[in-house]
Image (cartoon, rainbow, N blue to C red; front, top):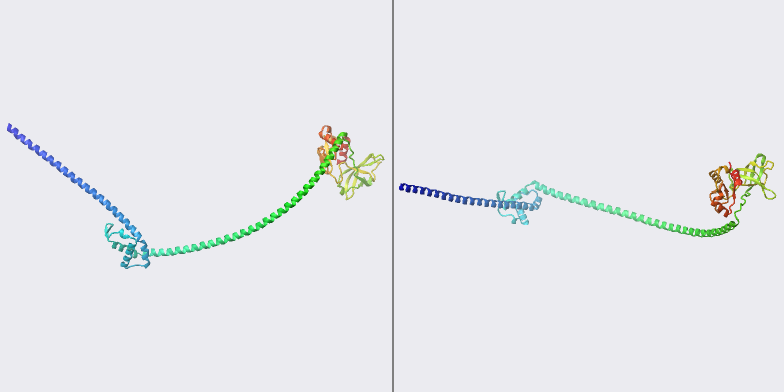
Length: 419
């Protein structure tokens, strides 16, 4: 049994050792594999970075080539002046000179990688030169540039000439306008000075007239003040004795050549006496005592220069006819003088046969100025009803203005203003 136990223990110990060995080997393999994989990954990453750096260098060099070709463009225009160049050596020589001129050596090495192809500097110069010189397009472009430049120069010259011509035309036009304005200004100055002289002359004339008028007005003022003083004295004198009803009946003309049977006669008043057609006069004579005796009423029918024909409208007594030398009068008539008549109180139709407005119109037609207040200009007044209560009546008394009232006023209006 012990031998069997020992044999079993030996067998188990061998298996365990084998398993341990297997596990150690697997671990070593994992470590090695991991190291290998990690190292390879790092190498790949490093290669990627190098390729990216190379790509950037290539892109930069491509950019440099593009820049170099652009720098060579002036040479292309220059060699195109020779026409179609076929001598490659001369072209290369010219290109090399241009390369030196534009310092391309610092940007291009002897061997450059372009699009995956290696080319020497000589190959690059040859390719560019051949393409440029063998291209009709380059020649045509150069010729077109030359023609365009010449056209632009001609256009510039034409434009400059036009501008010079336009400028000269504008200068001439401005000069002409300046001369015109100067002429107008000179003419305006002359007119202005002439106008000033004329205005000064008129001002002096008006000043002289004004001074003369002032002197006349001062003299007139002295006269008026003197008359006012006399009027005041007369008012004071009249106020002390009261108003006197002065006789306003005046002898204004005479009857000549009466023809009573034919009811007409003539009077010694005419155009020179401011007579009007239709004007009526009362006829009277004075007796031995100087008392008036009314004889009739006549009306002007025809007016001549120094006399007028009148119709006999009324006789007071047919046994006492109108005779040669009888006097005529009209209280509303003054030869060659404006008459001022005041209407005081209530003027009513039942008293005068006319209302106030009608009487005003009739008096105005005879050239009479009608007043509603008395003044120093008033010749006489016609009194209506209730005149005593009016302030104007007191003024009339103070100025001793004559007046017609009651029957005398009614008869005057009826005789002289009736149609």
